[in-house]
Length: 156
Image 1 (cartoon, rainbow, N blue to C red):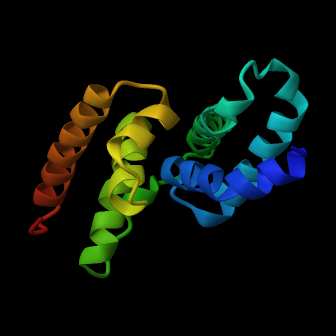
Image 2 (cartoon, helix red, strand yellow; image 1 turned 120 degrees about the vertical axis):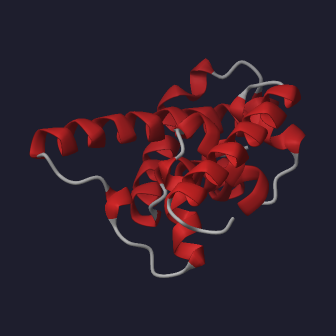
C-alpha cells in the first residue's frame, strides 16, 4: 500500500489526536501534517504494517505534547496570561475551557471517548495503555472537570 493511501486512511484520526492534545484546530492541522511527514520518514522503523494506525497516532500524540511544551516555554518567556483566564461566554465555552485546563494525559482520552465517540478499546490501543487505564483516566478527568467547573461557579 502506498504511503499516500495510508495518509488518506489515517489522517482524520491523527488530526483528532492532535486536536485532543492541542485544543486548537490550526495548531492541530500543522502538527498532524508534521506527524504524517515524520511517519513517512520513519516508516522503516514500523515492524508490523497492520499497526500503522496506532503507530502514527503515537507519533502525533508525541509531537503534540512536544508542541505544547515548546509553547509553554515561549509563553513563560513572554510572560503572557494563560488562556484559561478568558471569561467564558456560555456553558459550552466554560466546558471547552475546563477541558483545555486538564493535563494532556487526562484530556486526550476524554476527548477521544466523549467527543470523538471512540470506544474504550480504541482509545486504549491509540494511547498504548490498558482499558482499565482508560477507565481510570476518564474517571479522574470527569472528577477534575467537576472541580474546575464548580470552582468557576458553573453548574456541571
